[in-house]
View 1 (cartoon, rainbow, N blue to C red):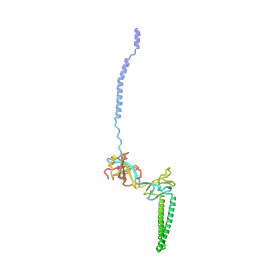
View 2: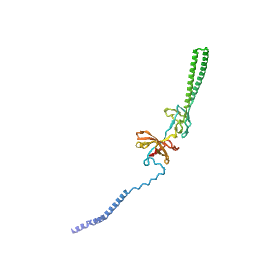
View 3: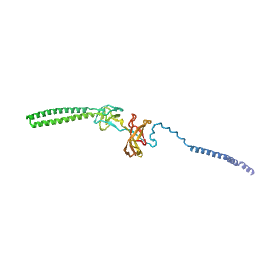
Amino acid sequence: MDTRSDLLKSLRIDRGGEGGEAKARASWIAPVVAAGLALATGLAAGWMLKPAPAPPPRPAPAAGAPAARGEAAAGSLVASGYVVARRQATVAAEVTGRLLEVRVEEGQHVRAGQVLAVLEPTLAQAELQSARARAAVAQADLAEAQRVLGRARALAGQGYASQATLTAAQSRYDQALAQRDAARSDAQHAVAQLSRYEIRAPFTGVVVNKAAQPGEIISPISAGGGFTRTGVCTIVDMSSLEIEVDVSEAYIARVSEGQRVRAVLDAYPDQTFQAHVIATIPSADRSRATVRVRIGFDQLDPRILPEMAISVRFLEGSS
C-alpha cells in the first residue's frame, strides 16, 4: 500500500513552480504593455492636436491690377455682365426674290446706304419699262388734247366753235392730264419697287454674320420649309457698344447715374477699362431679384467686342 501511495505521489504534477514563474512573468509584462499603450495613446493625441500648417502667403496684386471676378475691395460693389451693342440690325429684303449676289463678308466695314446684296430684278425691270411706256403714251395724249383745246378756244373766240365743242375739248384735256399724272406715278412706283431689289446698309457698322448666299430665295417673311432666308447679314454699330450687368435688388441703392466704374474683360484680365453708369433700367427681374444697369465706356477699344463677358466694380463716392 505504501509502495502504491508513493508511486501515485511521484506521478502527481507540481503546479506550484509554474504558477510562480507565471506570476513572475506577469509582474514585468503588465507594466511594459501599459507603458506601450500609454506611449501610443500619447503619440496619437499629439498628432491629432497638432495645429494645421499655415497657408502660404497670398501674392500681392500688381499695381493697377483689377480684382478677381466676384471679389470686391472694401466698400465697393462688383457685378458681372456682357458687352452689348445698342445699335444692331439683321438686314433683310423688302420683297421676295432670288439672291443674285452678296457683296459683303464677315468682319467687313460698311457705310450707311452701301449695297450689301442684289436680288434678281427681271420682273421689276419689266414693270418699270412698261410703266415708262404708259407714261410716254399719256404724255403724247396730253399734248394732243392740249392742241385740240387751244384750237377750240381760238375758234370759239372767232365764233366758229360752239360752247359744247369747247367744253368737250376741255374735258378731253383734263382726262389726258389725269392719265399722264397716273402714268408718272406708276413709273415712280416701279422705280421704287426696283430699288427694293438692292439691299442696302441701314447704318455704318461691321458685318458680324453672313446668313445667305447667292442663289438662295430671300423673303421678308418666313415661308416655312427651311428653304427661304429672312435675312442676309447682321450689322453692328461698334460705336454703340456698352455694358449690361444685373445687380441684386439688395445693392441697387448703391448704384447711381454717372457713377464711375472700372471694367475688366474676361479675355483681358490685366487690362482695366474706365466706364460710367448710363442708367438703371426701371424694372426688376422677379425670378432673379435683380435690376439691369447700363454702363458706358469712357473710350472704346478695338479689343472690345459684342457679347464678351465682363466684370465691373462700382466705385463708391464717385459720379
